[in-house]
Image 1 (spheres, helix red, strand yellow):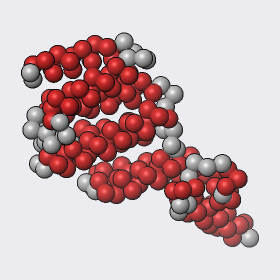
Image 2 (image 1 turned 90 degrees about the horizontal axis):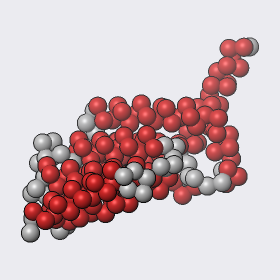
Image 3 (image 1 turned 180 degrees about the vertical axis):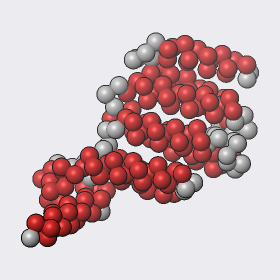
Length: 193
């Protein structure tokens, strides 16, 4: 009898988790009363988020950015305010996939950089310390300007430096290094004249 009860509880938990993971994105982030499945599964959300972290990491190891994107969506649906997830995903797309060493196609590098910037911007909107994500966006753009001079970024390297400076200035609200990094970007722009 005890075994069947444990099996029933495990299956119920899995069913609730499945309902949560299959909730349409339009209901994610809504009030708890919006979905009975969300209320039932609430105690399982941290566990489900941990499972998604493992699944995202597995997709990265498989070299499947398409799976990473899909699984990241589920991860962020479970924990939209996770600064760690935003940073981790932004780093993966911006530093690994957008690198000229890994991606020979300049247009694809720009696409991956945009994905990285989107994750960082999401982090900036939801983080307790948004300035960290503003600085990070500046770093991603400045790095692209340095390592990818043949970029397909609209406006080219000048635009990368200019946008990086703007992000650094916004990040300076929380940390003075933003002013210094913005000045470096403006100096790089001067050399391009």
